Length: 159
Ligand code: DAT
Ligand code: MG
Image 1 (tube, rainbow, N blue to C red):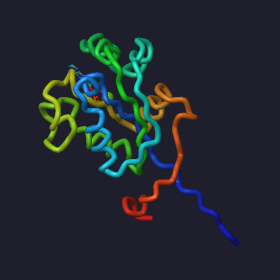
Image 2 (image 1 turned 120 degrees about the horizontal axis):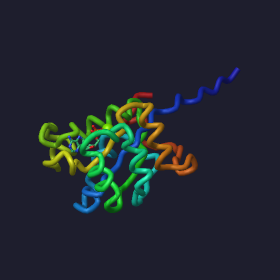
Image 3 (image 1 turned 180 degrees about the horizontal axis):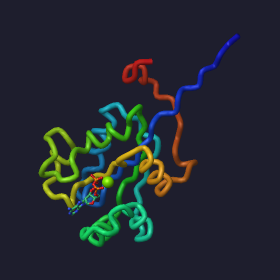
Image 4 (image 1 turned 90 degrees about the vertical axis):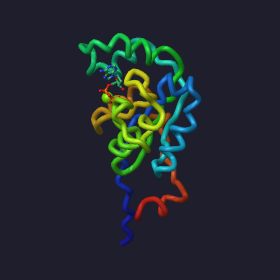
């Protein structure tokens, strides 16, 4: 009997190039780092976030003093929203981005190499699988997230 084994669905995470990254011409740099790492791009769009979505996205920080400035900043211009896929995508994307404050972020990380200020830290990555599914649903319709085969997968992931 032939048993067709479906591949276990890969972990997905939301990544953003925030408005500072777009204005500084760092969209390609961020995408390159995530692509070169071996993550697989499942969705991407350039968009401007409205107030309500921004407040929902950063809902966990609503009581923090930096919240109004954060919402103003994230809605201040276009950003690039992406869904990246890998076994452990949440952790891999967070590690590739570095610490929240670029001052404490190691060299080699996106924030450590490219930023100096916590309020202009260029990128966002979901902090857990639960946050990822909530955030992905805020930014993307299910039909905008693509499932496809990448021909070099066996050179990145041991089958
Ligand atoms: P992260 O983006 O690493 O998940 P977070 O969820 O704690 O960090 O905070 C969300 C964003 O809010 C962060 O990317 C930058 C901003 N932020 C966090 N702490 C801040 C602070 N103390 N002052 C100014 N902005 C801050
Ligand atoms: Mg966070």
